[in-house]
Amino acid sequence: MNKLTPIEVCNILEACASTKVSKLQFGELYVEFGASKEEAKQGILPVLSQEDHDKLNAAQVQRDAEEYREIEKSELLLTDPLKYEELLEKGEL
Image (cartoon, rainbow, N blue to C red; front, side):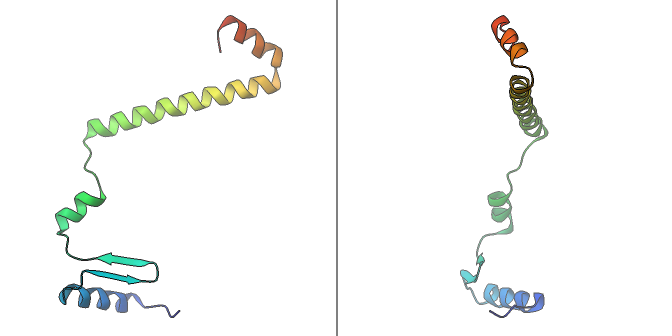
């Protein structure tokens, strides 16, 4: 398959858009024309507030901390099984 130059791709996209082509597929490239810029932005990137970002970050930190604790427990079980059982009996694991 021949590769297109960036200029050729731009020319094809401009021609499709100006001639009311609604969809274009070429190999792995798929383009759908007709959505406004605002619709396209809303469809691709959700708009998140700072509060939303903070909540997502806090949730990720919590998941990371839980994963780290599980890794630590697994490592302790392998390196010091007696200590692992002692902590498990005490309810500290």
